[in-house]
Length: 519
Image (cartoon, rainbow, N blue to C red; front, top):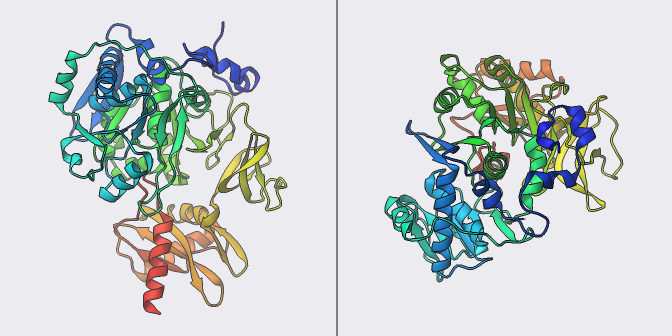
């Protein structure tokens, strides 16, 4: 029987796909399914490599499917011995490492719920999340353990080498008994500690629907060597970067520690990765590092998500790696709904577009009344789910060929003197200036126009009046005469969300605070 993983073309994706055929990729069924078994245990074959962790320090950690299977089984027995039961939460605040994969997969083997936490959270960020999910255990390292506030009923486990060695007393085999609809993972989206998003609750069945993004968003196929440098605390790094490829038996690369673009470039060369999926920020940092020409690559498929990629970075990626950069669009809550089908020989990748809907998915750009917008007209991107149109809270448009384009978050629209402008498009234009490394645009109050555009720019060049005029003239020439930043501020860095996206909300709050103080 031909499986969906054996088809590579866009035409076959449309003709051959069905939700039912996704189940053919797994051992489990609609009643019994376990993510840890699907991702790890069923791929134990000799000492085949599962994960290569590129550490910021310069070293690599290589883990086989067998080692992770045995480690996670012992950890599942350990949890049971500690009285942890199915449905209990186990928080894991670790960088990619032997201990991380042991804890995440061992928790799910037992039937408990894994809760990955970002390692750069401060005490407030940790406290808010453990107050929300109420874990029985929190697994971390010695450095981070001191950041965990004491809480009745919470045990903090330091997963160091002595702890792992102590697990040898438990059996290296554990047979999961979870149902497909049992909860497996609580995933927090990237937000601030003051406005913590609610956890998205995933069942073991989620690994099946995830294959849509795997096949058509990142273009995963057996035989790939896949790497994603995003933190597995977030959806991109965990679901697309870890669980999806491992479920297909693919060797993956992960990144641990403070991100360094050249360290990633060296890992791409040393381990001959063929498929890379990263955040837009990662690609920009690789471009800005100037180190790319020093290495050789085997990449065939490239994808990104999180925020748009500017044209200069897209050109750098294609000329450096020899393949087009393909968008993958979605959210933690709704999954991936638009993709550019990396690796599909018959899909023309349009630079700047989000691609087209993944198979089996209805997506529209709609006006405020809920009617479809004609090509070229901006509206809100919506997806058809459970017999209703679900808003994404993102703006977008389509072209005559059915490709979708991002127009920014609904709250990132700037209206000045009756003109509607996109912060994303303005930023993309600013980033075309050779001296600009990063840029963000927001609307600030203006007594005459209601709002005007203010741009924040990161550059090694001094921010003088001449530089400001160059930026303004560039945006005018690329967009419209009225569509340019009337105010330009230079900053050493831009605020980011934990997932690495530019945080315009923080910039707006700062401007509002400054205006209030001045008043």
